[in-house]
Length: 197
Image: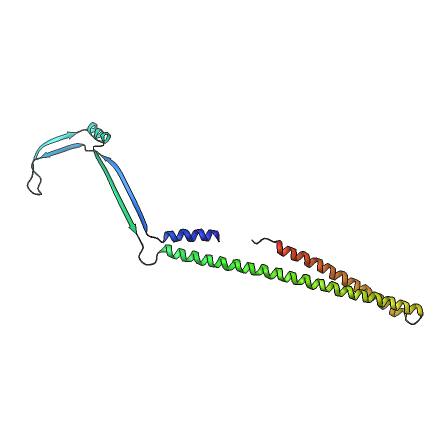
């Protein structure tokens, strides 16, 4: 998203009018045969009345003394008429930015949902632990009662074995509930600490 922000700022600058300035400076010299003319009438040149020869030494001297400087200055202003490719690129980058923001919000929503779900599982498993503990305590009391009845001769081995089986099942259920509760606590801590990618 930070990269998209930088691209948007850059592309906004690209849609603005462009102004360029250029300055060139150079040296010139005249060499070779130069004709000397008489003054002419109007636009017609006059008659050739002589020649003047300039050699390489004169040309180099003109360059070193900067006798004939040449410079140009230009300023250009350009603004596209209608839609430009820069504006299309800017619109494309803005769409990408909106897509990234939507994806980020979706990820935040998923994280929130995962954390809430894990918290609900912790509460549910905690209530299961309490329920299975109460069930185990009830099964222990029932076994004790059946054993007293058996000692008194008013119960059978079958009912005592049944009470023992029910107690063992209740203990297993309680252990399973405790394990599930501990696992759900670990899951909750995990979803709260995992960094976003």
